[in-house]
Image 1 (cartoon, rainbow, N blue to C red):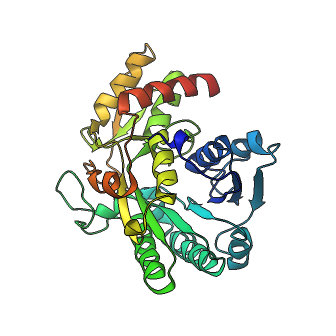
Image 2 (image 1 turned 90 degrees about the vertical axis):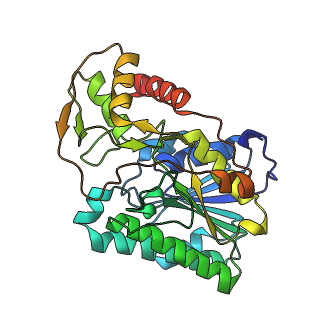
Length: 324
């Protein structure tokens, strides 16, 4: 079943933390399109005001400017909410190596505040963003839940800690929680700017500007790039999943494998450009290869991703051509 066909009562209220960010704003838009109510919590530390502007005139949309490191704000944001989709976190492996204390406060303590607020407000389900980075140096492909290696960055540690705290709240406080291990999400509204921008929007922007993008390492790294529509599906289906899924984590990807060099030249071809990339040093903490086993999400969440990489990258390129 497509997520557009899911049946939520129109009185259902969602809270999306980080709702002004890339993934969060797409979730807010999808929820509004389903006819439900959505409250967005964001402090604009990484999210953008332009991402929420299209929703401000909608009577079913509410915005709260606030920081998840503040428990009182989290408690207030969770009032009268049915489902929480927790996307508020700072990403980027390299940046986390430079700012470990902040990542701990924001990604771990902030998530713990949200869990406590959900418990106190008797939220029906807490669905939160984890990451494929938790697999660390585990070499086997595809990546399978329960077979993890040593975490390679503070960012990965924060996501692993979030998973452990969520399990505790399901175990001891009867709060249904579901963790979604995202694999390299891309799509509309993903920020192409800055030193820590994700590779796909960065490639597209630089190529459209006539620049030579930098590929870190030799470009032979592989990723299970996942289009934003698949992530929306996983979040909404997780809300309606049975209690069997509570307290667990699930890989959210398409289940494919793309190499950076191939991606670069595919994007170049789609833009009718032939610009040689520049190869730079490898990034600290990066995982060399990533490919997901999504059978567990299929079984417990009914997750059936419709958007493969080819379809997703075509849609992303068209969006950036119109919006950059």
